[in-house]
Amino acid sequence: MIYTVTFNPSLDYIVTVEEFKLGLTNRTGSEQLLPGGKGINVSTVLRNLGIRSTALGFIAGFTGDEVVRRLKEMGVANGFIPLSDGFTRINLKLKNIDGTEINGQGPEIPPAEVEQLMERLAGLGQGDVLFLSGSIPASMPDDAYQKIMERLDGCGVQIVVDATKELLLKVLPYHPFLIKPNNHELGEIFGVKLTTRESVIPYAKRLKERGAANVLVSMAGEGAVLIAADGSVHMAPAPKGTLVNGVGAGDSMVAGFMAGWMERQEYEYAFHMGIAAGSASAFSENLATKEEVEAVYRQITGA
Image (cartoon, rainbow, N blue to C red; front, top):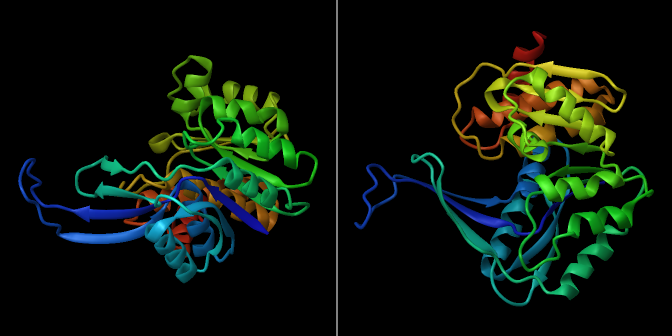
């Protein structure tokens, strides 16, 4: 089975507002309501590629119920733990004003519910895949990813971690199957500026030496680099296309990589699938469909 974890999911209210004016009443030109959060994005792209997963985490209130309802409609199984207080956050995103959004805080997560999730994850075993994505809410222990991986150490679970700096470094001793920093995050870890694919390689190798099996580095318009578990190095430029929406592109990349790996167990194929899925989402209004991913994959490989 495949599982994704989103500690602090959201109901994303995505709108366009023509000629937005501060301090005045503005009316939307278009509206969308979608379940959000990095793990949920991974589940969505996997489902678009024909792979079912169970979304885990915490939900609360009427907004949490709506997140679960919409995921069920999409074919994503519900593994969320309901909280008795608060409500799942609402994130407002102004689509036509690049990068402008207002994100909610989310509910407090009590220790008992955290332990309930930990016990559920402890049931995973050989052949399961687990995605740990995004930041950890302030109401949870900041070593939550580390504790999860400690419990699952030696159980045969392939764990994908998409997190930044300290969260990422703390899990390396537990040998995650895949980590995906971008070049800026990788540079921040080592105190350097990384702008070319070649410059990324030695630093990605250092994360592999610290314990990661595969290190996939996304570089937006510069493409991507993979340091694979077998020692091979893969590099590719970014596919040609128009950037429409960068939100979820990184989540799409890890989903595409793992979809490719589970299909063939070939690193080059998984790498190209990761780039195709990440780029297809970036070129699309929403997260990439299977047809969009396949189109970008053909561009990358010439197949």
